[in-house]
Length: 384
Ligand code: SF4
Image 1 (tube, rainbow, N blue to C red):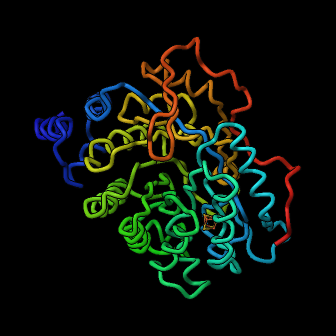
Image 2: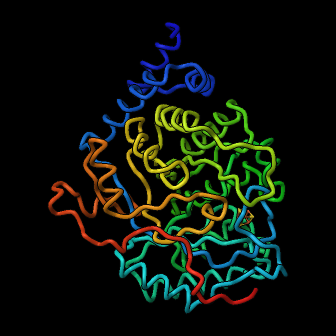
Image 3: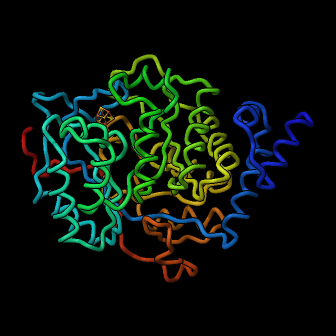
């Protein structure tokens, strides 16, 4: 490693800010073990308790009907398609009740951009969930949904956010970020809002008191420089708002969609991104490893490269699974993965507060049902 690169790595490991160009140099050229050691040093300083967290939540998809037609998406169906469906409110509430029974603390409502769902549909749904299950955090939707609802209902982004918040939305999920850099974003999702608009909506939300996470879907044909540009765009907004709670990179899943000729990010590309993200984001507290898309073993490795969280058990997940993600897990397995990585497992809530710290394996929960799955065919489906 050159002395210049070593100098950058040392500064980053000491908590100093690195520029996008320096991040790119580290991403491309730094020896893997040195990169990981520096990122782990940052993680240790941020979280000296040696805890790594997980979450119990359920993704509930309210419709697969979508007008945005992202090329990478295997989940959506165009309006009028015979396989389109909508979940009605009783079904959504039933799933929330199941999640509560299994110990979930968070619901992530995700759906297609249904052309007939205006702000009232979301207000009624959120208010009903909060009335029935006030203990559940609604960490749901995202900037893309705000843009879509604004179009359908003739409202500004600010108005949409304020009304969703008033109806019960606690925080926005970081979904829809995909890659924010304009060239690759337009190539994979030409009808989606621009990366600048995605960030502008998040900035507005943070200003209105609605925090969020930020994600990154790697591996749809973007260059290394475009990957780092994605990080820069998020960090600039975070400097102004402080509203991104965590950064969550994951890898594009290539099955059953219209994006041809692209391969997934490799394991090394993903792990290097985890480490560089920990070094680059001196202003975002948490970094999540994605076992769902990269697998449990690779997810476990992220805990040695800067990650402090393995995300959710995902009692239900259908979107990424539709594109080929086959990994499933359960509560005991995630606890075991974290512990065997040399860390203390803890269940967290949406705000990253520790709910249960699993210090003694003898006290580990014996709830085999708390595991991830995709929807069963027995679910109530209403044709759209
Ligand atoms: S990723 Fe979301 S917005 Fe894009 S097509 Fe799929 S459901 Fe629609």
